[in-house]
Length: 585
Ligand SMILES: Nc1ncnc2c1ncn2[C@@H]1O[C@H](COP(=O)(O)OP(=O)(O)OP(=O)(O)O)[C@@H](O)[C@H]1O
Image 1: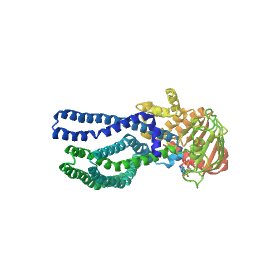
Image 2: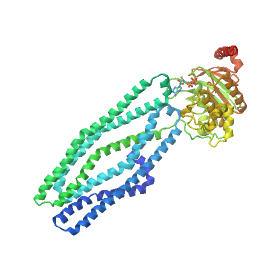
Image 3: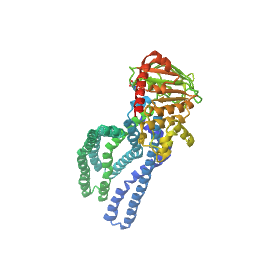
Image 4: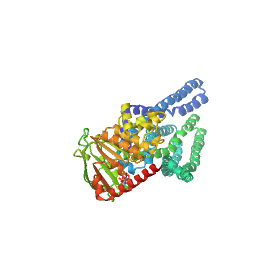
């Protein structure tokens, strides 16, 4: 019932259309008895009693009713399809809007395949219910009732004889659908697994090729494909097992009608026309019984899908969009006050532990540390991709949790480690955060990110379409485009997470010089593995196991002779070596 109430929220704006369509269903179903009834009259009045003048009116009525039923059926089918499609459209839109609201934790814990299944298969089960199941249920119920009423008025004994068989048909169909029901769910799950596998294979096609694991992947696919086929065959076998019995029972209805009805006709208890009418309405008993099981399945599927969709629509983001304070004007002061953070799916480990840190506009904070030490997690807290488990992150002196998250993010540009480019032109990718951006501005930012040279060398320049996720570009090129995309926002807080790791040192120095010019009023965080990327920062922090283990500027850190000093010396050695090789070359 909850599911019906929920879907009604979407469908109720079409209530008059639904009402009209339902009236048409009632009339069309009721008119179904006209054909067999008039068929009977034709036999009795025209053929038996020779009233040939009635032949044309009877035939005309029968044919007229057939045409009227076709038109009305067509009309309500179209109406229900429209209502179903519009409902589907709105549900899909709500799901998509919800997806945009959800936070990193949700996406960390939810499989893409599962989200896609909800957006496609489950929403379609809702459409199917609204645009087909609803009227088919009503149609069948009315057909059955009209047939029973009509039979009862002609001969209740024959009707009762037939009604002895019909529950058996209903029982068998229900059993069949009950056996088939779990199989439907299994088919759906199997299909979802098959889809996820294909999706992963396509995304990871380079890894597959590099490791020459095509054979393994094909075998894995074949297993999923086999599983899907087998489950479909199992489902078809269930129907196949029951269909002969159901056909035999339908035949039984015909035999009872002819045998008992024939006897009544011969003994003068019934007219031949009435027998013809009886035969003509048999399908109205048989079909609803047969449909009942499948309709029950469809309703179950609708309920299951509606639960899944409602679950997602009800999912609470831990980072709500609306907050107490506006963050429209943000200067960019950042302060971490004794911040600790545990990922929801790994609550026993502290990804960040007692972090305290301050940064003001114009300052640059360099963050260094081994992989997995918590560098990315730390900057993710600034943009509120996660909120601290304890302690406070303050932006412009205000607890970030109180700030309107989208307004806050409008002032932050984050170049992530895992770069994502849309399959669109380079121009559109760079201007992504600033819709309708000026072309010159795009070029200026590309120049600062040292991306202009390679972009201009491309056949279509800024209009070059990059493949999905930026396929067709080198790692360093992607990094520079995503840096230009971040700079376009002219943010108060700029966060560069390993942004220049894939570019050569010369290019990096060039980018740094340009960045220095435009970050004078910005708070900049630079995560890096190279000392050269952070050595000019106002403060450099070294992270290990979620903690800040060293901090200071370049000189003071060297004087501490700790991790920074070691890394510096190692990298300096490499640098000297590189230079030596170049000199010799
Ligand atoms: N979604 C997550 N759920 C649970 N643990 C996570 C999640 N993301 C990261 N971690 C863990 O948190 C720790 C810090 O990760 P983080 O990405 O911040 O490291 P990092 O210092 O940026 O590493 P790198 O230099 O390799 O990018 C790691 O131990 C990592 O395994």
